[in-house]
Length: 573
Image (cartoon, rainbow, N blue to C red):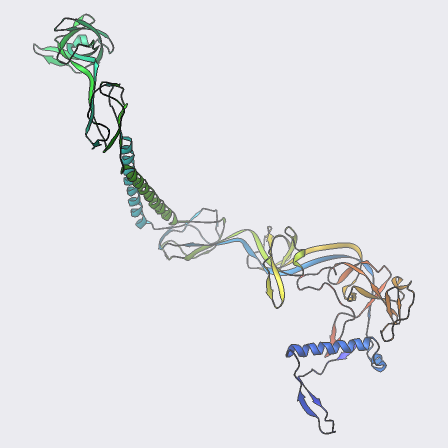
């Protein structure tokens, strides 16, 4: 059936005057502007088609009989795919920049070099930072010493004895204010006495520490037993050119010895060259090392105390604050130094990824400016592309699907990709929504970023199935078959309404002349052919008007409606 569309519809038409006068041009405004014109045109064409297909004027029908195409129902292998194009990109791309300004000292790489992650690319002159780094280190050292001193002051709030002995006197009471250096107590070990006397040097050379000695008091001639506590290494010459060494003997105080008494000693049959005076074994004046208020006395006068034992506890209202402040000063100094170290690291610019140098914009000796791209690195371990998939097809795409990739730049080779991401962030344009699908290509030899490629995703396939041309499918998944087709052979007849364009209705099958309309179930479609699951059989012949054809200004309208047509994909109907 052909319609002559050589005259284009316009927004104005001529109307014959009812009085037989000349034609008058009137402009008739169509709704929707140009779109309205198109809508009216489509409706007009559709009305003519239906009128002529279902009877209409016999003379017109005789002159515009449609030309049908016959096709046998045959077995085929079908594959449903979605295709699209895209541009290849590197797996990862990184532009190396710096926030610093300075002279580049080294840039030991070239374009095309492969670098590892962490490889030093540039070093920038850091001489100005070095001085501030040293100052930060000094500041931290000073803050740490001050903090340690405050901790020591806190520890010194407990006043301890430096020797073992008896508390001879306590100079403070609870509540007293004490300053650093003030006397707190006197400790004396008068339970043990020492006597230091000279012996002939040759004899003293044979003595040893701990050796027993007999001590005789000059006043009472009482004899006490003692032991050698010290032997002088130096020789001394007495009057008469007698060469001696002084030996100190420790003696337990029986209770009557004092520093005013004197005595002699005998060691291994050798008598001392002269007598000597007794001294206390140990005596010390204990002073406060820091200021504070006496909050507790741990001992009393006359008590025996051991070395490092606590005597008095002080308290300080300000020392705690001073320690906290000193601690904060240390932390601030640490942060300042860490910041300097971080800045120093910025002067050595390293590769953030493993990849290939694509661009080198600066070289050694040049001065870099802040926020400038120094070089560009691509990770070419694999390539990616993004495919825009129509909203009608996106539900068929899944992560893990394989993709066939072809590039015009690489002839006679098909690459394999895999879907790695199906985004839900769609983009709408002209009433159509598409979704980005990311594809990864691992084996990419011969491909380069920026190349244009075509991608094909296989959705479904069927082997050795009944198939017909997709153009033979009509609205509602029906097809026309010849009356002698096996699928139309067993139809019984019933009279159809007059003017329906069909002669009889049999078991739901509508016939028109020698053709029968049959409902079918459709499976996989590759765009050109569609699988027929039920409704037809081998030996049937389908009848259809090709989808569209044109000759000059004449259009032939299609007799069937193709299902599943998409911008980017081909699916079963």
